[in-house]
Image 1 (tube, rainbow, N blue to C red):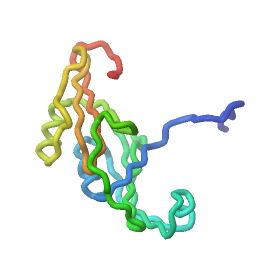
Image 2: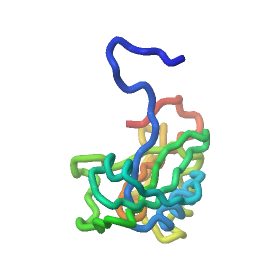
Image 3: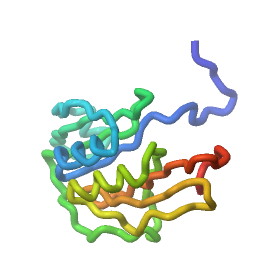
Length: 160
């Protein structure tokens, strides 16, 4: 039985929805980072039209899970209607959801793997107060993923 609050509000994190043009390339990128990417499926119907406020919607979607098995991303590619990517990739200082951060076991190793697969970092790998190595990587179609790897011997804390 769930606990009902006197003041309704958020009770837990579910996932981040990420709309993409190239679902396969986004899955490839996230799998390279170590996520478990589910098989894409196709959905359509009145309920989707109603929730997104568009008509005749057909989407391909795949759920992406973290190492603990929790859903992290819902990847969505609109087959119809398609908006297309209209804007250039926004810079890291533009207002809005700009990056999502994850802890990794080896920042340099993951960055090397990402670069070998054809993606680049936004800046460079930096040492944050001798506690974490941090690096921004821009994925397909622009989202920025921050990689954080705790340095050996550093006290456990979360980077800013």
